[in-house]
Length: 465
Image 1 (cartoon, helix red, strand yellow):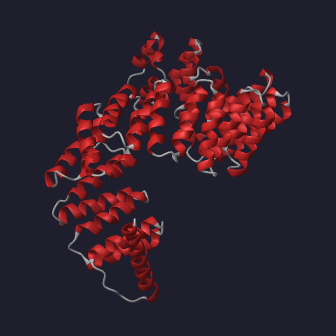
Image 2 (image 1 turned 90 degrees about the vertical axis):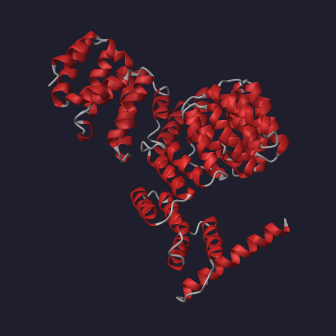
Image 3 (image 1 turned 90 degrees about the horizontal axis):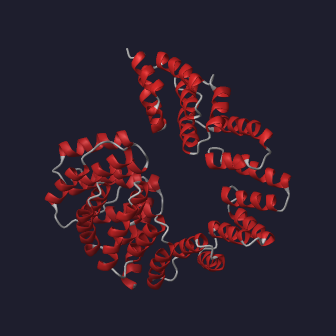
């Protein structure tokens, strides 16, 4: 403990010396290890401008060392300057001997940009240079997980965790990947093995708990979270997620205990307060529910879940106008939430719903920057939820919007076909194919059912250039 505090003190003092040098406009010599400590400390302090100064100073001091050039790339990636990062990596690769760090940054850049890169090939090059680098093994595990190759993913993850337990704190990146790819069974296989290998690593148990939750096996998820708390009882996220599990099991009293425990550890946790409101609402204790929703909003005035919960309580209490005012407030704070947009419609009588949808949609369109993407998400949301008539009404009102001039006919054609209004669908699809024939591929991707209509296939063949 004393050694750690001494190291922290040294890092702060070095960073202050560097800042004083910059302020005075003088030059001071720091060895390469000191420069590395200074940069790490400045980044830890979130002083990005001064960290940038330190990186450039280190590059001038040590021009033959690629390490600080790699740090420049890391900073560029953090700042989303991907083109500059790629150019810098090209310079480093052509100027300096290859290092594992070079290939690691190539992989990280590819991941951030979504470019089609053979990351495993790059990481194998890194391992050829250093077989013992745990960071390379950790990234290799991620790439094999992405390919659903669990045995190889485990091999590399186990090596990384054996070499440095700090990677336990980074296992959440694997969970994000598994959830995104819906690899729920893979998650259980992967994390069960890791908990066997590293029973005292909370991150392994947390990953296992999440995997069980995805499969709605909440009892086993709760058991796994208990292991996390047995290792570190002051883990608010474990309490919060246990609360979620108990809530799904309709055990709201136990859910309340864990949400309260999470809040006790972190009194800025507005999500736990909101969930406590949900529990009281489920128990029909509406007055107490409103107390906790308001507490959550006092910490985060724009929290949509708390506003939605309040609106629901007001509706249950027969306070229709209060419910509508609150739901509209929620939409104003989060105008791009389709779930919220359509949830709001249930607060109005059917004759009012379409007018309100148009009003909410127009409000959103005034705020959103990338309209084309927004329309695309709107279309897919409506398809997934079979909101065909709503979509047709909105799109016909907005079809003059330049953002969708070349796609609206395809969108309307899709919804008319999906709602079994075939002649109208054919009319719009014919116009769409005349305007932009190649767009039919995106049209078919809206819903697989579209390919089953003979009329669709006949028109695509008829208008083929």
